Image (cartoon, rainbow, N blue to C red; front, side, top):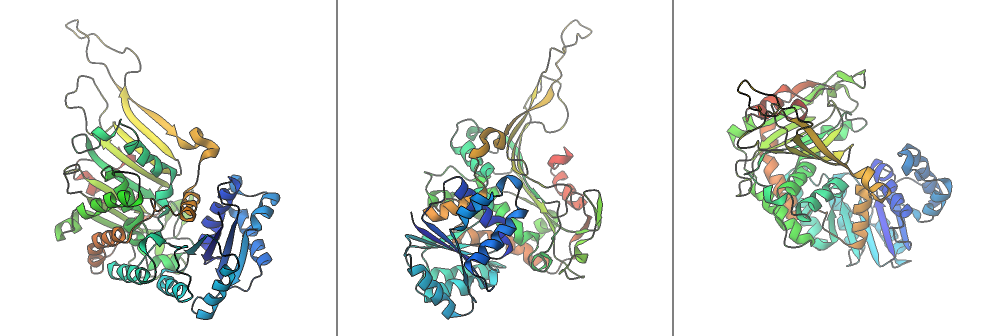
Length: 490
């Protein structure tokens, strides 16, 4: 199948860190259609060969096993081309149209990996150049907007020149193999679905922790913050994957209809819940990797008086029959104690204890997202016959010990694994929308987080927490009010 993939922002950070390595892996695996062309677009004055050399030099920073050999890159590089463009000039879009007409590929993918402020302009200019025909698919990176109003404005502008089926709003968490296996575990097996409800589940925790700071993204991050960067998109999409009802089939709209129902069922924020169930923090100087690191306000590009949050912890509920009364906890942050993204499904204790068991919650399913990728089922078992005779000659209750069943997807599937961006890019080329976000989903997510945005404009500011810790103590206090604890505290 012939395709042209136009990468707006072709020399940018996302392009060389994520997209090009993903495209190369698809090429290496033989899943990238051979009759394809990848066109990098940026303002730099480069030839095709200079662009290829730039991308090859960037591969030195890629994980070792994913780096191409010189021979591999030479073959891959034959697909790479470059076009200098100023995205504000209509004449440059006409040049792009001329370039694409030379091949007349069956599919044209426009990947807009630019600053969000340029999304509307780029899409409008694509249409003005006549590049919005039925063969065209446009990929939009997050964050799509800064609030509900700006998100609606972008979606309205895009909707004027493109059909919804042509728009691929990407959330790379949905492409992670562990998230795919969450869907498979729930809807491809009969084991868990009967107990996937309030009668058996005590609480669900979603953690997305990073041990790094804002690095070189200080100026961008200071205008965004953890709520917009992680919660509005990644965290809520994971929550939907956990909580949605089984779709009627595996078609894109059937899946997205069920996710939308979850977002609409999230309990709305009230002045009381905003005070009790929402915690935000900002990291100060601390220790990471055994070394002293600076606080957020001392990072390059960050306002010294910044009120931007680098940590968010939330408690919410889903107001429907399946989940009524079950708390969902969301936590994300930078400069935390470790890099760890996971979903913990904590089951209720047995209704009547006949064994002696350790205190705390021990029955849980952990879906590991990164850096580990797989499933862990935690339960209790009797390792040996450790019964003791009581004074009346009867055997006393046996002591149980925690054990776990561990499925490591990397070990199980090995070379068969497909990375998130690799999967999603191939889905765009093939026109599969299942793992992409529909406009009404996105707007509903913004509607839910907007009271938090408004409330934090006038509050006392984020709570400080030392780099290398698990965030403000108020986060632990929030979950402890329900009688629960975060996974690392159990």
